[in-house]
Length: 271
Image (tube, rainbow, N blue to C red; front, side):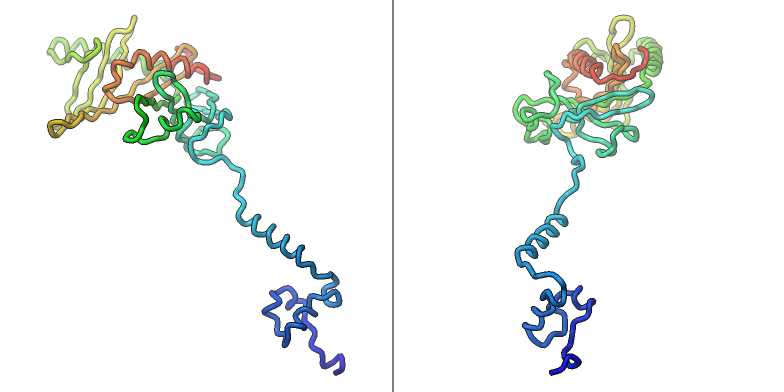
């Protein structure tokens, strides 16, 4: 057999899988990868290493923060309405953009236990991340947000509420609530209403708003969702939510969240 009659594989064929090349025998497949055709000796161990490395590179996940609550304490910067905060990540349960170094596009939700105001850690995980139906006995948590531009708004709201209260007293529109609170009620349906609860607090009023839906059938609990805003001594704006059955704890919640929020303030507003 002369050299002209021997078929030699082309470079394109060598780049393809050996099994796909038009060789007539297994021996010719090995010849194609011999030093005479490739310039390198075939090494089975090296081939396995290359395949393993390629497989790992395809399955490796990038090192980016997970988009979920974490026990990490890396500080997260939050900028909102002129206020600036630095918050350890394990206080945060929702964020608009988990990978952003500064949170500007949405208000992160923070969550702590009550009454000790602890963030997510191995001891509080079951309480803070479980649904209400499977939480451990005695577990209570509070969700809150850090905001800004509250000073003027709170003063205006208190002044407006004072006028409403005076007018309502004349028409007997004020109702007595629990724990020294009174409230004004605005019905929105036969079983639901908006309520503003208030009581004197020094030279101003302590007040919060609730949506309350009465139980449609006997034996079922009343549904309520309340929101309160605070301005701390260092100018932090705090907005937190709670159920109406926690009204007895509001003073303790105010104190605990105010003290905690002050530790996050980098730049606050004047009270």
